Image 1 (cartoon, rainbow, N blue to C red):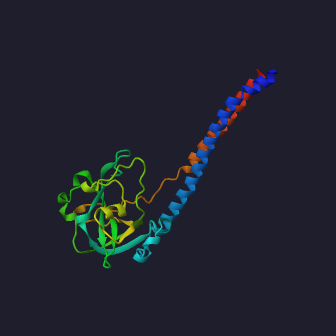
Image 2 (cartoon, one colour):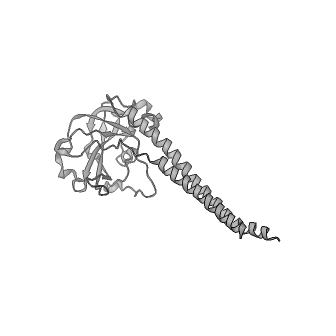
Image 3 (tube, rainbow, N blue to C red):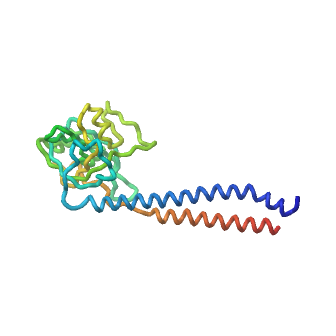
Length: 247
């Protein structure tokens, strides 16, 4: 075996390792570009749907065909009667005054019974932990017919880190209208929620208008970073191979 052949063989393992790392880096960069396109689409949805005069919710007859990409973030107005006995406090965080110091508490999901008898879950807004018990905020549960303005939202997606709900103790960790409805044996429930706007509630709680409408979009920067590291890796391997062949 010649010296050149031995040198080429010595590059096989480093070359394979470089190819694996390069594939990972290019995959991460491509994924960030895909995320960028998704985020831009979401921002466009918000800008097109969340402002202006409120419309009506999708008719109950069409609920089985409801799709988030066609309806989420649309501004709507709905009238009905709250079923406060089925109020579901969903654990969550609210941005605090200082960055990195969020406020722990609950988002109150309450069924709103429409005149037709159908039900739409309303995210009425946020309360801090010490106000979880309705007895500590008796003014927060108005009776009679109410009109709510807000944004249509899809059920909250769960991930591997989302704790399991405990319906028996009324402990919830995801804004899932169907799960909450099933626990209370409610029927004819919309597949979406409505995030109530910032109209003040009696007693000041819960505080609505918590839907984030300004979304960061740094995915292009992240993609450029991954692709830049990939180019650097190629340069490092070329320099390494050149030096090895010249030895």
